[in-house]
Image 1 (tube, rainbow, N blue to C red):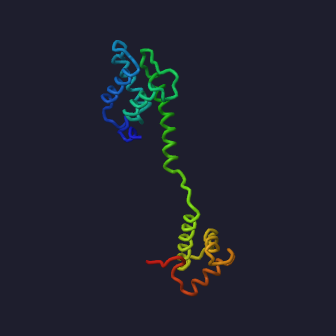
Image 2: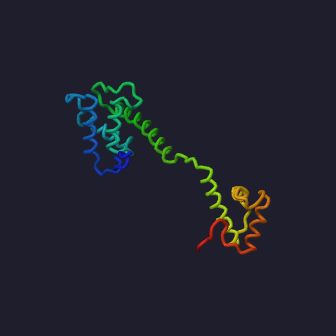
Image 3: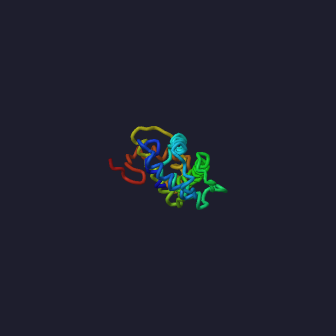
Length: 187
């Protein structure tokens, strides 16, 4: 979300001005009339509450939270502040926003890491690459057992008749001085 890329409230040297501006917007958005705007003391308490409890958010997130709440896109039944824009009211909106944002983040992560379905041929190509890399490793003196997927691709490709022949297949390749299994390795 683009609003997350901005500077966090806790890292703004003097957050009072940007916070005051966004709070004026939010108060107008929820219908607080001019004669019910918080006084200097109430505003100070609200600003300190925000810095202490929501300092990890950005100013734009506060605006987004109130926009979404008023539009009915957060899990809040009643967004009316009844002319009392208090820290409790602010927390109600922001906590609902946090739940929404966490869900959005999980969805974005799922999309980012959505597992791709490979075709059979793509999977076989990957197995052939692993088989060739395995051969290169043993050719360079790394003694290890033949991985099952390497055995399977050798059988599939007709290089051996069954998986039990894999070790002797590689020994034979090494004895004949074959440089690469599926491709010539260029160092």
